[in-house]
Image (cartoon, rainbow, N blue to C red; front, side, top):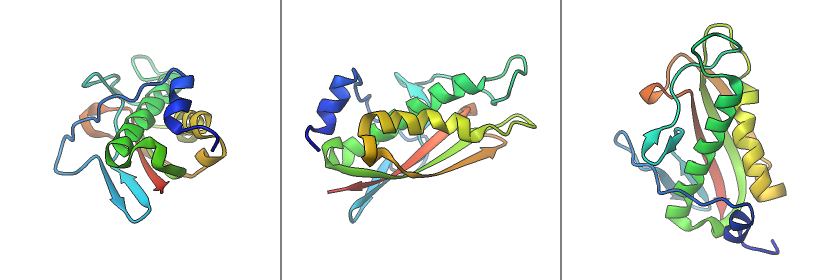
Length: 157
């Protein structure tokens, strides 16, 4: 790595937000050996859930796949903030796994496309170190009515 991840974030104009306060009895991130596991992160911006609803293709009054992709990116950014609070982003060696949950309207099967919002974002920041394993799961409901939730497993120094 020729530069630090903090420098890469600055180059991209990305600032890490404050760590999102837990909504239950858990910690936002936990280090075990050379891995940091984040709890599921919601698309929270400035302390508020940025978007609510189920994801669908074209149903009225519902979250579009494109809106959900942007929400997944915000979730990944919030997860990076949680990692930063535990070890600092410059300690990241690679993104190991992304797990994403999409609150899906009946018949919606585009969960992988929604999670590309998180995966592509991490790839933009970390390049080859951002290539990861992933699961994209459709669910009936998510906490607080969020359309998407993302958690990371990150290898660190």
